[in-house]
Amino acid sequence: MIAAVLNLASRCIRPSWVTGPIFDKELRVSSRRKRNYVLRFVYLAMLTIFVVLVWLSVTRIYGYSSAAFRVSRMAEAGKSIITTIIWFQSYTTQLLAVIMLSNAISDEIYHKTLGVLMTTPINSFQIVMGKLFSKLWQLMILLAISIPLLAIVRVFGGVPWEFVISSICINLTAVIFAGSVSIYFSIRNRRSYAVILKVLFVGGVLYAFLPWLFMMLLNELFSEETLIPIFLHTNPFAAFVFNTFSMMTPFMGRAMLYFSWPLHCGIMLTASALVLGLTVKTVRKVALRQATGEAGLFVKRRQRRA
Image (cartoon, rainbow, N blue to C red; front, side, top):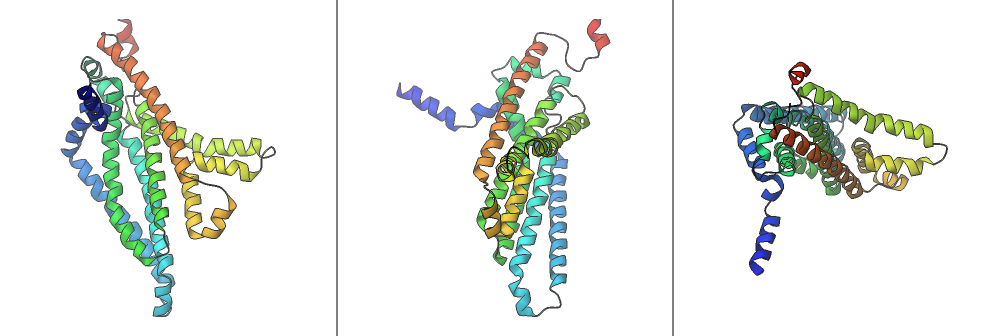
């Protein structure tokens, strides 16, 4: 009895029961691809260029002032630089998540290896989670690259650690949701560009069109103090804007509207879990069809009829 309990506890502690061997296999493949190292170099180079441009613009504004005045404005310079880093990360990491996961499942279907995987102890849940977390691991490395820079710039003052931590958490949950949607569309789309366009369309509808539509329809029934917090907790870009505004003007931002970044992250993770649940269910159906010898998703109609 005790041995069974210990065995169950050890399985729960180890992450392999979630991702299976797919996670390890994808990491090994990624470590052998030069483009991942090129991606890190380009990401760090672009981030450095953005930070240097912001620094030059700030120093140019206060360049003709006294030394004491320039020192006193270092806090404002730190705010501008950290805000630039956070916003740069939010856009690039979400876009990279969509691109990197755009062919996560379609490659397995096209090469007819998805059905073979279902004949092993690996289940559809481990396939989806292994694919997702292996790509998210690469993105977390990119986020970790900028953490020392954030810590150094924060020495200038004016930027609380709460803003840095909350921004990273909001970004991570947004990346997980974008990656979940991308891996779902990759099941039925062979071409990566089709998946990317569909995810961008869904993001535009969820983050821009629907908030605008609800504001137009419900503006007469509810006040803005009621509607805007709902959008803040369901829209990562709106959360970034409000979080930045609250950091720049702490007394005014917090007093205007209610916003809880842990609640926002919880809602985004819940939405990601729903999408991933649908993805796991769909992958299982497709894999079983392929394992039983039925025509795949990417087979032309003429070949199916034949």
